[in-house]
Image (cartoon, rainbow, N blue to C red; front, side):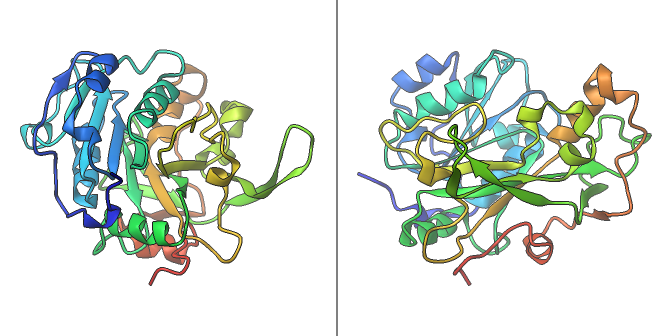
Length: 304
């Protein structure tokens, strides 16, 4: 039976938490984490802001959070007892697609979400509405996916925060975002699909491979048989990759993410060349959805 995504409550963790030594063990266990959505999958590449990432998504109202990463990444006690842990080496090729696609195969009808540590989900009115309420509205709109934009965050002071991550001094670009029409392999334009660009991947594009410069990601979607996440964050069902339904604008969300800034500073080829991420269009991030709405980085669609 498909769950109602609207019955999610704030600060709700899993009733029974466990640690699994592999993805196989997790999927074969009949874990309660896969029984009721929306289900969040959080991939911990390292310990940087792992706890704040999980806390943020617990507050968003996910019914279950499943955390993937190597065993030696520690979580605070107040976080660890509210999530399911799965030991997984995220440095392996295709780790994201492997995790998401195998979970899809076990959760038909459920709403799923994925992100990495130092990424924080924001959707319209998220300060007083849950992710379940948002997905219930999206379901009523006959939408099976939510387009999300990765909005780069970065510290304003790399001397104080050399890994580029600071929740108290988070900055974002207030302009410089743009979209290009998306084409298929035959060169034809795809209906209601665009490639979005901006942020650090645009300003420091010389350090970013062409295939990784887009900032659009379908981070929330309803699982169904045969659905496959591709390596470029798109799905094999074209409708899942659209920014809106045919009849009006649709709701969109944002992943406010330090991940690109962190990678640019960690990478030997770019780290020593970047003294600051700040520029004339930097502004302090207020950690509030209204700022993202005002900047046009998320869209409420018909949800008010």
